[in-house]
Image (tube, rainbow, N blue to C red; front, side, top):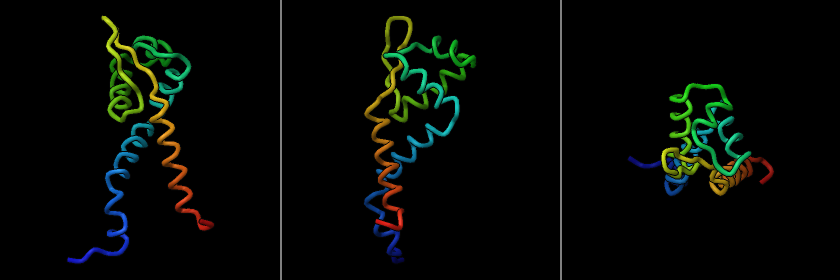
Length: 110
């Protein structure tokens, strides 16, 4: 079976595309966007502070934080009895750059 030109040209980019897609998927829920906004407003927060801000159940916030951490968009730091969470600004900047690159590559004026 032969590969089509479009499959062949993108084969070396698949892992990067998957990583970008995973980060975009983590950003695809409104609660996670709000969590990122809240975390960005402070140096770091514990889950309870996010719960109080968003008026969501602790288990719901924990699950959203887990998704953001797994995507590499939020850093997790154990801090005695309360874990601390902080935005990974470099990772978010990478998402922004990847989106800009994608839009530019799909532009008819390139």
